[in-house]
Image 1 (cartoon, rainbow, N blue to C red):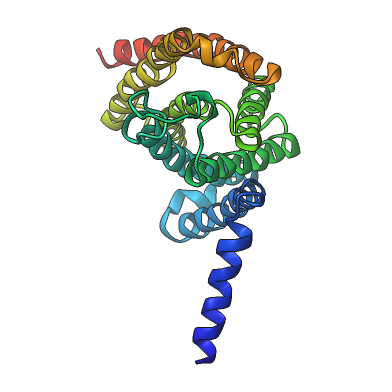
Image 2 (cartoon, rainbow, N blue to C red):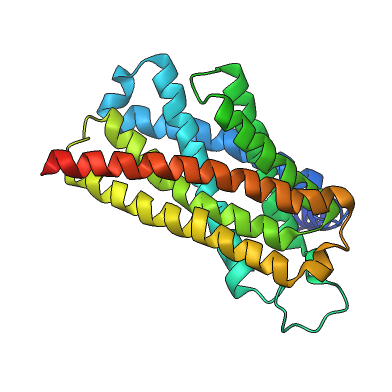
Length: 268
């Protein structure tokens, strides 16, 4: 009976406080930060036991190894969330007859997903500043600041969550990028896996970070009558952040193409 009573109290606390609308954005951000710490520790524990080359790495390389474990888990989580809300959920569907405009629609689940992502950006930025420039240079800071600001605004205002998730689909390329780094560290640059991974990065980047951005701009254009109803800051974010990220994506895509071309030439 006592166990049941404690269980009911815990459920009431989660439902009426942690997941209540006023607290959900803050709770989800905290969950995101805590999950980053948990994944970091689990990556370190698993790698030290099961991966022989891990212990031979320098301290900074081990930290980067664990950090990439965090970004891989976050990317996997937020990619699934983004794909669901953009292509499968009817929350943002034009076919759904709701009084609320598409740019103002949100749900507890969509809000929670964005909060976890904000927690990740905060944790990762903290690590980048702490070890600057070993975990990333100024371009990474710019990317995280732009992305984090847009996601945080969408989280706390409830505006433009559809466009935020469209941009977050680009995280689908992160696991492939991290795997490439892991293969490089393991001395497998000449392996077939490295080549296959390079081709996967090319197509994933082309789809998620270039073609999908074009689709997002088209969606903004066709729904401009709704976008213009947003708060001025949110309105600016809808244009400034995706355009800035698109420029960065194109620059990085050029490097990916050059790298893949060199890899193919060496194998020939």
